[in-house]
Image (cartoon, rainbow, N blue to C red; front, side):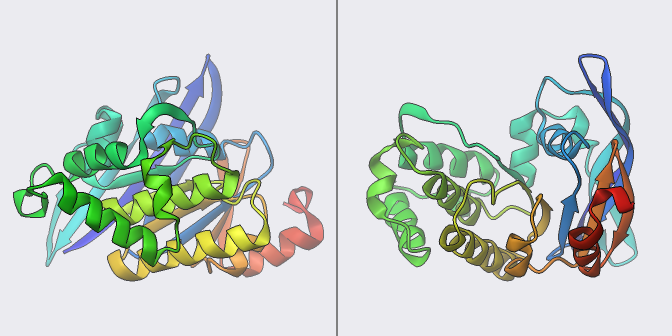
Length: 258
C-alpha cells in the first residue's frame, strides 16, 4: 500500500484577501519537497491550511491522502473538511515556525495525550502503564541526543529556539507521521542546531518513509535535507518546479529572475 498526499487546485483567503490562487502538488512517501519563495507568497498559509488553522478560508480545491493497493485506489475524505485533530490522527504533522510555550503542561504529559490520540484505533500500540510510555519516550529522547530532563518541564517553557525545534523532532519520531510539513523549521537556528534537526528529520524519513513538505527561505538546511523536488512559490502559485539546481539559480538571480 502506497500513501500519497494529493493537493489539487487549492485556493485560500484570509480576511477576504486571496493568498493561495490555485496550487496543486503531489507528495509521495519518503520524498522531500522544498517550497521556497519571497515573503508573502503564501508558503506559511499553505502549511496552516493543511493543518486546519481556523483563520484560513478554503475557497476551492481538495487535499486527499490517497492509498494505492495494487490497482485499487482508495481516497480518504477531503481532509480540508476534517478537524485539525482528525488530520493529525490520519498521520499529518505540522512543525511550527515558532512553537508556542504552554506553561504548566509537562512535555511528557502532552506527548502521551498526542500519542494516545494518534494510535487510538490501534490498541496494540497503546501502553498499559504510564511508566512504560515514559521509558519509551526517554529512549527516543536519548537516541536523538535530547536531554531527558526536558520531558518534565513545561511545554517549550524556557526552551531556546533550537531546543523547541528538537522537541518537535522528538514529537515527530513518537507520532510516526505519514506526511510532515516543516514551516521554516530552520528559522533562528545556528548551524549546529540545523545539523541536529536535519539529522532527526532524515532518520524519520528513513524509519517511517515519511513524506516531507519543507518550507524554507535559505539554502543552508537543504545541504542536510536533500530535496527530491524544489518548488518556487510566488503570489500564491507554484511558478517553477525541478531539482535542487533551482536553488543555485535562486542564489544567483533571486526571485526577480523568475
